[in-house]
Length: 72
Image (cartoon, rainbow, N blue to C red):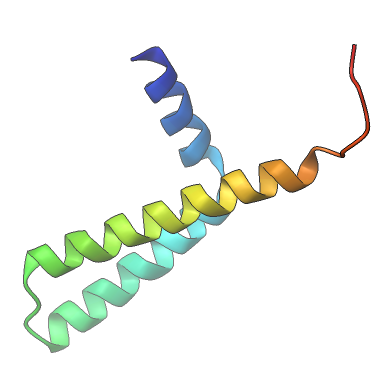
């Protein structure tokens, strides 16, 4: 359970995630006020953004590790 909380904390500290959630949140509010959208779709969009951000973080972590360098 601790590993889950550490991963969540790392995820929330990333400024790109905060920025993307802020932009998506504003877009959801704007669209939600102009069009009737079911909460299920809003939740689905949020889950999609979280999944894409987790994928982006893992991909950038793999790229940051240089192949051929052995740390002791």
